[in-house]
Length: 270
Image 1 (spheres, rainbow, N blue to C red):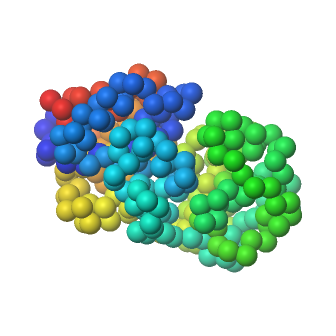
Image 2: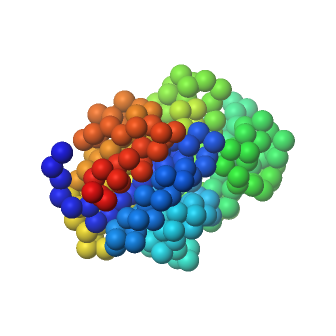
Image 3: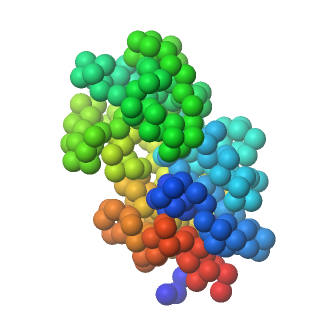
């Protein structure tokens, strides 16, 4: 496939660069390290909070580059300095939190790069803590009345079809005022409507002086589709959702088959 020389790579983490056990495969790590050695900018682009994303950037040897966090709500420098940060409007955040409170549904909130939960023994939180390794602060009913604007709210549905239904419902409740998407199939993630990974990719393209045509972007979730479409070489891993595959120029092997390494080896290192 013909494409412009790649000078920047932006990759999602969960379901893309990480395997199903949330680990970085050695092949992926080696390919990224070689790309960075050759002068390629490597950007972690994730729905995760900065605190979590930063650890993976360090493991990948890419801690010197900016990170796209919270599904495109934030761009942060390696030292945590925020270059770009969008938060939910307070009335929208309160309205969304009230929906989950009134329906007795689980929700967690991210404020100033800290995770807040209602109760630490909630099954959904225990799953999140085990899978993502992020600890939250239990605040009881104060979760529903934050004093500061959240960057993101996240809920976990029991079934994938429930997640899809709720994403559509919440978007309709606050039309044009909330961006509702999912990184994992059973997640419902709510951010500022101006947030998305593609916008952050364009901002980094401008600030780093790397045209979009020279950027490779890889992803698997609905929250990656716009970024994959915006990049000069957009790649979906084989386990990606249809929205991402439709946006991509080509399909790489799955996350468990080191699709990120394959893409870098084939289209960057060669």
